[in-house]
Image (tube, rainbow, N blue to C red; front, side, top):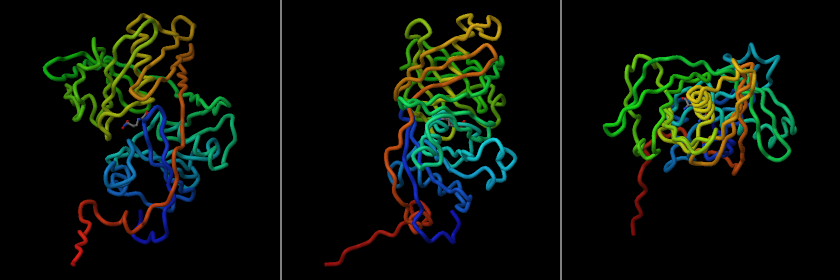
Length: 302
Ligand SMILES: N[C@@H](CCC[C@H](N)C(=O)O)C(=O)O
């Protein structure tokens, strides 16, 4: 936010499978959101609280999305809870589209959303679910090992526009408390950091996962992570739609619900899940401009 912001700043709060977001509508890109103000808004005790922030800007008004404006009117300027920038957010893009519908910018049906990970086509279904064409996964054998509490697992490297390391575990409790990022090596494989998913089998083409998100710690869901998990699990199971010509669908349970992921023969990945707007209000610009932890304590004299 710029120091000149003096009027109340509108916001909304939304979630997708309990991956929750502060939404800041700013069609003209007039609000400058510094990393510190994003972290302050996402703070669960001193702020509104969220795993991330969806800055809703017209593509034409944002330098990173101007070139996409003919194809997608709106740009999802995604920020992690710690204020860092991310390329994509799968749950976030569903909630973003739900916000556009809520605000009357689009009706049910298809909407194209520009992201740093390219244009995503989002379908708002009449039954309330939202399906996103997430693009293709890029898999590589990076030889990464993830360690928690003395146990280590090899991790599959999957890029969904943002980086993921997928480790198969016997029991999701083996991922530990995930208060801090599990160490992985070689660290050089992910110079910009990584989202780490732990996956356990639940049944045929059905898995459960926990995730430590880059820039946010453990969250209750990660949409790009669920896509990475579905593709990594399919390859582990010997299923490859690009080779067989047959789509493959996995159900991925997350702590906050369930996502259904289909990989098609052309490599396109579709994700279906919920997207909910839960509240809206305004932010006091004076509060946002005070550096965190430096509020004066008011004393009452009797
Ligand atoms: N929760 C998101 C992913 C958000 C970005 C991620 N933390 C990163 O830094 O890559 C999702 O639903 O995909």
